[in-house]
Every structure is written in C-alpha cells, then in structure tokens.
View 1 (cartoon, rainbow, N blue to C red):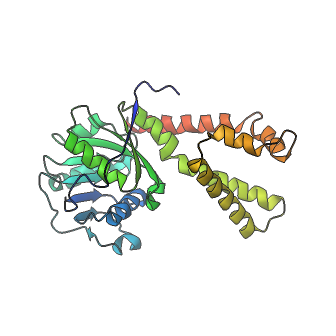
View 2: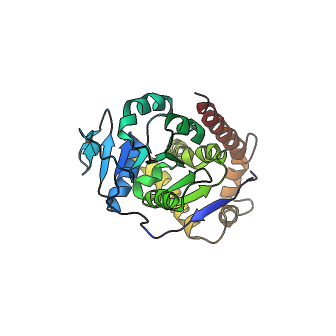
View 3: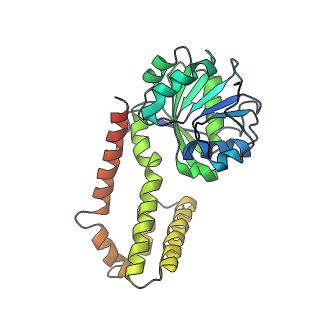
Length: 281
C-alpha cells in the first residue's frame, strides 16, 4: 500500500502533562481497561470512569467509577471508548460532563473527526486507534487530528497513548481505517493463527496442552526475534528455510493457491471496508 501522507513516529519524554490533569474515560471495555491500566502504571492519578456495566476488574482499580460529580474544567481530557454504534446516545447522555474546551480522544472505529465535531462542537477532537497489546504496555496507537490542533494538545494525546505503547501520528484521517484493519484488528489475526497451529499440532500427535504451549512459544519467540533483529521478516523466513527441507514443504502449501498472503489481504480489506461502513452509521 502506498501512503499518500507520511507517518510521523513520535518519541517524547514519558510525560508531557501533569499527572493531576483530570481524565474522564467514557466506556471501560477491554480496550478502555487496557488504557486505564497503562495510565495507572504511569501514575496518572485523577481518573474518573463512566461505565454502565463495570467489571470486577474495573471495580478493583483505584479509580472513581460513575462518580456523582464529574471533575469538569478547561484542562479536562475525555476519552471515548464506547461501541461506535452507540456513540450518539452516549454523548447525548454525557454532554453535561464534558467541558466546552475539553480535549476529546476517540478510539471509536469508523467515526470521523467531523462527525465527532458535530456531536461535540467547540472541543478539540483527536482520533486514536490503539490495539490490545496496550494491556501489557506493548500497544501501537495511531493518532490523527485536524491540522489546527495545538502543540499542547498534540503532546497530551501522545503522552497518554505512550503510556500503553508506541505512538504514530497519521496526517491523513483516511489512514485510520487502514490502521484499524492492520494493527487494530491485527492481534486477532495472530491469535487465530495460534489457534490454527495448535489444531495442526494436535493433528500430528501433540497432546492438546502441549500443542498450545508449542504454538504459543513458537509465535512469541519468533515475534521477539523479529523485534530484536535488523533483518526483515522475509529474510528471517529465508533463514529458517532450507531448499527441499521440511520448512520449504510447509511454505509451498502456505504460498500456494489460495496463499496465506492473498487470504490475509482479503481479510484486511474486509476489516477496512467495515471501518468505512461504520462512518456512515
């Protein structure tokens, strides 16, 4: 894929905002909780959460859940982490809890900056697309905002998302749909591959528990090697592959028709299309 706009990889000091800045998290499902854990580990202290169905995990965290009074001031940061299909109803319900000058960071797949500006006039809007490795501080988050965003707001958004992993700014909002399909949904593709490899291991004689162990450790070890190596994925694959050997026999199947690459391409296209469809809700 050729990018029409550049990506900006951002490296900041761990904090570009006071740890007492009021943060309001609206929605605390899996991704909301993943970000919340990262913020707590980075000592962001003033966090309130609005969640209709708080989990036991959420209830165990040192945050203020469904407070009777929300801290509202011009430095307020609001993170929208609800299902995109529900965002209008949620914003109608919580308009009074969002300061007119608040910065709003949305992780809603498919919901554009313009749509959010229409629902939240006057607020600074930033779109974010994190992924679930944020749970362990290994996430990758794409950020996008209108060109008139201030440096202060840009730094705050970066600082918050750096607490859960790496940050990339994309300058073309249309790229957020592509990011959603690749890194937002990408962990599920990898987990499904582990499922498939586990089933394959069972079919060639592994006990189920041993099959899952071998599949998991093969993937996590290979990912760690890829992360630490200066060689790209293609070269690392070739390093494992001997002509006429066992790996080559397997790759002849995976690279045949339909190839794993072609199947994955169709999967990513389907995810991107769905993200684009959500923008029309």
